[in-house]
Image (tube, rainbow, N blue to C red; front, side, top):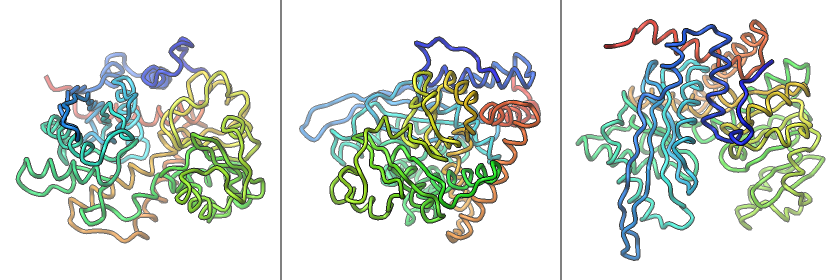
Length: 423
């Protein structure tokens, strides 16, 4: 296996990582150079400046981005994140990953992503609402159920999506529930959406263990991140018989070799604001917890946590990437040498966008499914997508990540070739 080299000083640049994986997959597919240029170039990159009056009367200007990477297979699809370190490179990479993610699970969306440079911890709910509504108004011409469908992401939630939906609807003069996903149930949200990304991680992890001749029952799991993705994955995996031996958060980790009581740990965090000092576990250094011996490591927090500097210390048999971009391209080489079975992010965490697609379908139909139907259709799609990727890997003698990229690029390229280039 080879991975396109990137300079070490650029190792943690998410756009360079996305480019490196794309370039290798495109080369292995023998993709036409012109078509490769089209596929690796975003369709639109929108930068907006958002004037907002703060609660103390001051005016502040925030920077916002929306990148539409591809709309060849359908409307752009991707979250909006609020964070002080949001960059255009990050949003560009995440938009490209959304294109490939939607294509891997074969749903009719392209890729998009948005972000606003702000620190939600320092802003009131009213300030966040004003930022959200003005950001939405600034990019309104590019949004719509057939154009670009946002969703929650880092530091945004179903309330944020309700504000986006309402702002869009007020401008077009009728209620448009399908303009966003990840909404409250009472505004056209889907049952099963909150658990979808974590559930998808569990589904593909179970398939990976089966492929390796292992069983979920008693399999030791280390989870980094205890938010929506990591928390839900921990809860569902524990219910399925996995043994969650460690959970890692920003302020440290907790460890119990016999398995953590996940509902009790969630209650402890609600009461104390931290997972630390949980009575049924011992506190542990968060970096050391990442390298515990286990069957499954599930990073579900942020990008670039597994790099060329620490990949050799990973002692998991299966790496399931719940976060976007947790592993850098140079780290892939080390994991392959150490026979770690990687379930790449564009497959592993695609449960969220899959149920977002279900939500979009339900909104457009005006007919809503029960949770059992949502979960069964999610499982059917995730299982088939997992086997499509590993079959592609076997056929082309590449690792799972490059196989997922090859499969996705092939599907998007085929759509572009069928449509032709409008001139």
